[in-house]
Image 1 (cartoon, rainbow, N blue to C red):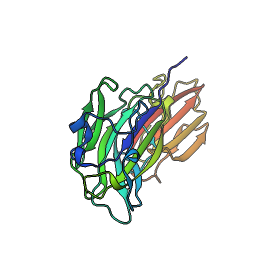
Image 2: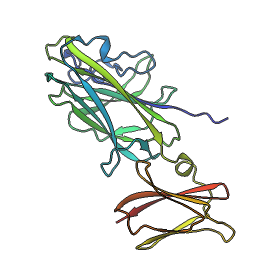
Image 3: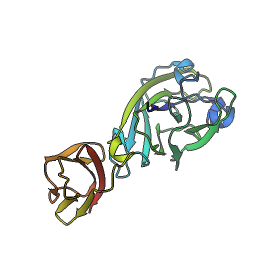
Image 4: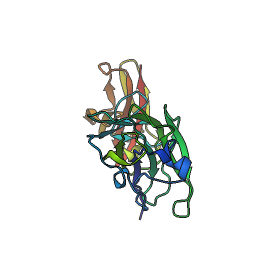
Length: 266
C-alpha cells in the first residue's frame, strides 16, 4: 500500500515586542499553530477593536492565482492582512509540513520584510520557517515556495494578528483561514508513464504521435490552474490557433496509460 502524505502549510501572523524580528530568530519558537503543539496568535492577542481578514494567495510564475500545484514548480505564497480600523503593525510566521511534521517543499527568495529561519528544539527538530524580519506597517508579505514531488493535497492553515503596537498582546485582534491546494494531474506529472507518446508542435496544431497500434482515446487541454479548456475523443491532432499565449498541459490517454505534455505557446 502506498504511503501518502498530506502536505500542510501552516501560517501564523504574529506581532509582539519580544518578537520584533520574528520569534524563530529571537526565541527559537514555532508559533505557526502546527499540529505538534504550537499555538496560534489567537491564544494571546485579544481584546482589540480591529476586524482583521487574512487572504492567502498562491501564484504561479505567470502571476496567475492557482488552487493546484505542479510538483517541483516554483510558486509565490502571499499573505495579505487587512482590517478596518487600521492597526499599527502586522507580522507573520509560516512553515510547510507533511503530515508526519517533516518539512515539505522549500522556501526561498523572501520578499520585503521577510526572513528565512529554522527552529531547533527537543520537540521540534529542524523546522524551516518564513517570518517577518520587522513588524510591517502594511500587511502584505510574500515568499517563494517550491512544491515538493508529491501527489498529495496541500492545506494552508493561517492565522493573523492586527496589533496596536503597544508592546503588549492585549488590545490586538487575531483571525485565521485555510486554503486547500490539490496536485495538478499527479498521474501525469509525478509518474510519467511510457515514453512512446510524442508531441509535435506547429504554428497552429499539436500532433500527438503514438505507435501504430495506439489510438488516443481521450485528450484534454488544461491551463496551469487546472481549468479544462478543450476535450476530445479519438483525436490525435489539436488546433491551438485560437489559444492565448501561455503554458498549457495536454493530457493524452491511450490503452489505460496517461502522458502529460507541458507546452508553451508564444
